[in-house]
Image (cartoon, rainbow, N blue to C red; front, side, top):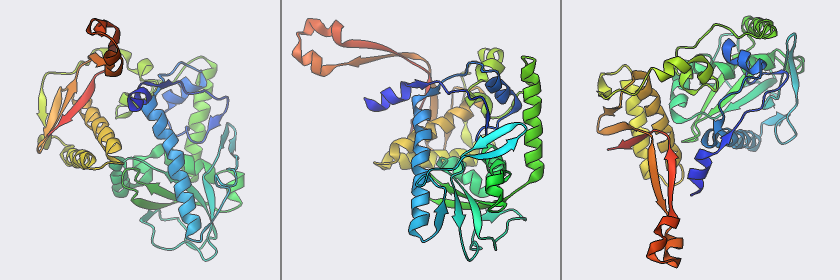
Length: 346
């Protein structure tokens, strides 16, 4: 089926010759590998299509703003402008747009930093569409804490000469891709963050000129998803097999988060259109926590999530089988390798 084909697709990310504002929020080691053009793990088809879906959500937000009577300049509809965020080192990017609000921005943002200005006419617009679980964390802890890469991207845009002519504040529209709920956050230019980011890039370039990468190694969720994890954690990954135990989710520090995952998984089973996305995202969240504890699985309330080991799937082409005699069975049995995955049941 199509969804299986998409999930198994692999796309190798392209390495550019200049820094992109959308990536400079990554860790020094990641960016060092990028600068040295080291071979990264490919994106799975599902991740690639999730990124493509982000463009659809961005267009949706811009269209909704325009229908609400708000002018959006330099958006996808006009052709996004390329801006120069820094010359030393060279950082470029393509902001999602500029909001033209003649009477100033309404004071009903969900959150804004202390330097955000409500009486400006122009605001940088940035759009992001995370899954339900990241969305909940954003509402509680905000952009800088939860999506640092996006926060730094906005800071680099605000530092550009092109955006600087409009102002120094950004409105980030966050759309829950599973439920379409919106969260709005106001972010102002933080020159300290910009300065620290540029210093980091210069350190990376200096190390890269010597063929080296930083000694930094992350110790959070990124080590499970980073495209360069095979270069940073090859030995650790090989030495960390999945254990035999199944943990009681209520006893873990992530208990409340696990309950949210379980609730969204249940909701996904009841929904037709968005259900498959909710179920897939729930499985990924369960997998992340299972791998963090090195266990075989866990239970939370009445939901069980178990890691299923790598194995062989037998798929039979029944249409072809009908056209042939029973002794043609060998021709229509396909053996497909499958990576370990999380099976969720209630």
